[in-house]
Amino acid sequence: MCRRYATLKAQGITDNQLAIQIAGTDTQIRTAPRTAEILVGAIFHYFRRGVDSVAVGEALDITPVMARKVIYQLEQVAADLGFGRTMPKPPKTNTATPSKMARLRERGWSYACTAKKFGLYSHHLVVERLKKAGLWKPGLGAATNWSHRGRVDVERRVR
Picture 1 (cartoon, one colour):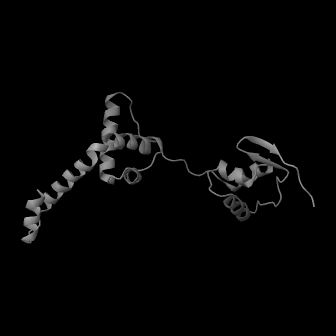
Picture 2 (cartoon, one colour):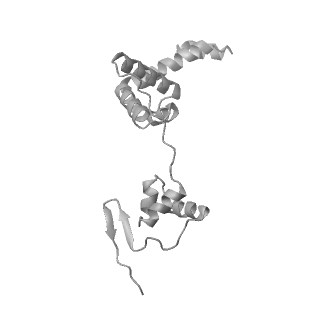
Picture 3 (spheres, rainbow, N blue to C red):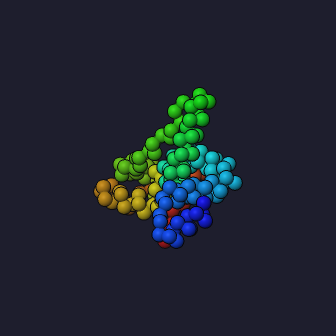
């Protein structure tokens, strides 16, 4: 196929069907040894993590079209086995409202733990949102700290 395509291209003739066949064969050659990796990866990324086909394709180094094809075929197999609808739930929207953050801070939660609770990557985002909403109180909860292990009392050091 490649020789034929090269000959046609040298003559200035473009054969799109032949180019598509070559691309398909190339994909089969590249992915055949990785079939198990692609199937398990699609199951994990799409059904477990809930990401779209573009993210699945990027994670597995395949095209989004191929990712959608694999996901569709997995859906068909799941339906044949009686699992019903297996589409992932839509991701939850961020419920980090300033009022909820302020309530946690009043209970003694640290900024870092409050950020972690709402899936924010930095405690600065908590401070920023509280200030913007007018709910920020400096020094609130300084006597105690909440960590992932539970409540830990911290002595206040006064100089």
